[in-house]
Length: 202
Image (cartoon, rainbow, N blue to C red; front, top):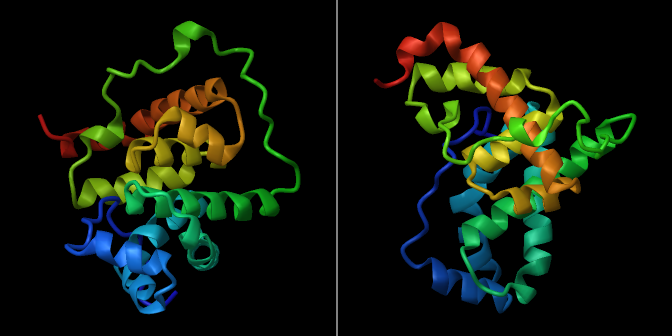
């Protein structure tokens, strides 16, 4: 996708007239939908790139997501449009990831992970503490080094703010497995980012 060789920031502010554009798009207005696509294209590509780690696959996932979103607009039931669109993008990305894997990802809970090892919702995580600039470059590299299942769970949860249930629905695995993947992914990220701890704020 031209001009989108790097992931965009996770947060994209809504358009001032977004609700009106969404209503028009839901009524079949292609111009309104095109404005929404133009505004959120970088955010959707950024999510796909972080999940897939491949520019061509990310572009394909973003394109698939917009096609699906356009087809689904007439059934749009309201809510935060950005979140709705990002969920579609995450699903499109995960579909590509599943097709690329020779064997399906196991969805059984990790037998070595007990309840005591599950993530503490109140505990800080590297993504929540990240500052801009150099740390983000290290963070992107660290995320790309995670196994696909952990990267997907961590990105959806910690970068894009989806709850465990949303991540579980997208990845089609139990919530307990998602918690396990997030926990292990965060631990690995802390290890990878430890040499750059001076980049974190106080």
